[in-house]
Image (cartoon, rainbow, N blue to C red; front, side):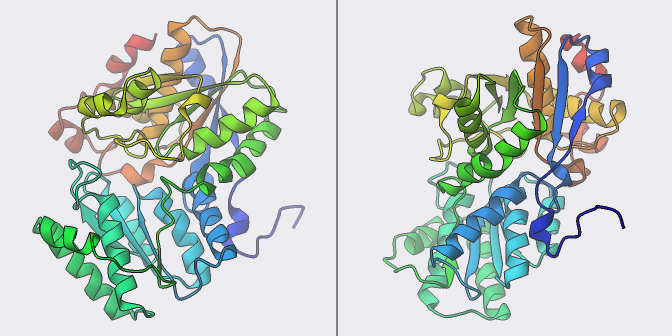
Length: 385
C-alpha cells in the first residue's frame, strides 16, 4: 500500500492540508509575486475550523468541563459547528448550535447530518439582543442546566423546538427572563464559546502556524487571513512574529467593525458604522477576546460583490471551489499588493472552506440577482488588472 498514512479516527485526518500555487491567477492579474493558497477545505469536516473545534473540546475534557453526558452548545456560522461535531460524534456528545438566518441552508443541513440540532436566529440584531445567536446559545445552556440531568433525544428536541418558537415569535421578554435566571452551570451543557476561548488562537498557534511554517521552510513575506473570531489570524501571527518578519494582513468585509477599530476608532463609533453583509465566516460586530488586533500588521476591506466575484472566478480559472471568505482573502491580497506596488514576494493566503457550502448562494445566479449582485465576474475584477 506504499507509505500512505492509515488513520484510525477522523481526528488524525485533520491538518496537513496542501499548498496550491495560483499560477493562473498570477498570470491573469499580472502579479509579480508568488501566490500560494492553503487549501483548508480538505480537512475532513471541510474547513479550517476542524482544527480549532476538536482542540477546544479536547482541552475542555482535560479540564473536566465535559464528559460523554455533556451537550455541546455553540453559536456558529457553521464551520466551527462541524469541527465540534467531529469531536461529538466520536465521543458521543449531543450538539445544539445557534446560527444566524443569513447562513446558507447547506451549513444547517450539514450540521444536522452530523446529528446536531440547529436553532436559527435573526441576523440583523445587536449581539446583546436576547434574540441574537450569541444570547440564544446561553438561553439553551441555561435551560439544560436547569434540568440538571442527562437529557434524552426527545427531551432535547422538545427544548430546541421551544427555544426556536420563542425566537420566531420574538418573545424577547421570555428569552430575557431565562437569561437573567441565576442557574448554576453543571456538566450537562457546555458552551466552548469560540469568541472568548483562549484555546481558539492557541490551536492555530500550536497546529496551523507550525504546519504553514514548515511547508514554506519559514520563507514567507506576507500571509493574508480573514478575520472572524480572530483565532486563526491571531494564532498564526503570534507564531510567525516569534520566528521571523512575515507581515500578517487581515481581510475584513464591508460592514464589520475590525478595520475601524484597527485604525484607532472606538468600538462604540465603529459599531454605529457596522451593517449587515452576506459573506460568511469573517468580520464581526463585536471584538472577541480571541483576536489581538495589535498582532495584525494591516487590514484590507473587501465588499460582498468583490468576494463573490473572485470566489466564482476561482472555480472557473483555477478549478478550485471555495467559499466566499476565500474569495475575499484573494481579492484583498491582490488589491493590497497592487495598491502598494509590492513585487517579488512570496505570499500565502488562507482559504478557510469549500464552495459546496454555498451552492444555493454564491454559485446560484438567481440568488445573486435577487440580492442585487452583478453576475459578470470579470467586469468586477477588472479593477485589479
